[in-house]
Image 1 (cartoon, rainbow, N blue to C red):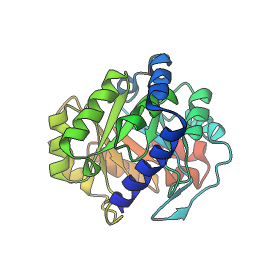
Image 2 (image 1 turned 90 degrees about the horizontal axis):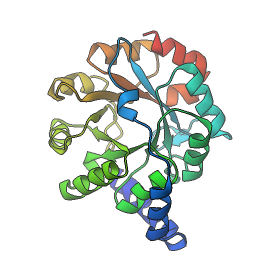
Image 3 (image 1 turned 30 degrees about the horizontal axis):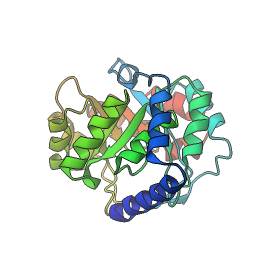
Image 4 (image 1 turned 60 degrees about the vertical axis):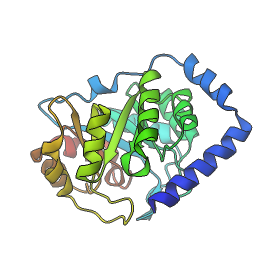
Length: 256
């Protein structure tokens, strides 16, 4: 599944590049105001931080929510106390787009994450050109030389990489990279199976000073509390927010 998602994302990026050249996108990225400081926004505190996701659908669950106005949803997330807004920009399986990210960026004052299957520099420049402050890098999808290249480019553009892992080996690669924001995804992107305890088994491998993000398998405040007790500084939540009242749900989760 992961290989298919990456291949599709690269094919779609190739189509966009045929319309808008790398040089044009790079120029637009460099002309953007400085990216917001996501690390400061997500720094550990006495309560959990939440990355709230604009997510219409997923390969595992199908359609979740129509979200006709991503900007309005993002504003609700900001009102509800989210620290960062994540926007799915993958179109084939998640129903997202860069237009969603641009709309969200224009509406909120929080840092915005481009969540996609990023596997080439063009997509990183696209992210900054659209206003992203963070870019997701999935270690399982990238060989080390490419992972390093993309990580360095994200930093050069003033953004922050959320480096996502699923295994101890991937976590070691993220740490070797120097990542300051490391995610552990409970969902195996090859099988789409969930293991909510995975974060707890890997958290101690994450060095002090690195922000720990727990991803997936969150439905209730108890799930957020579970991750918090296991050492999560931040929890990334999508489905539970788009399928309910976002402000009320965030308020409950932040009280966990």
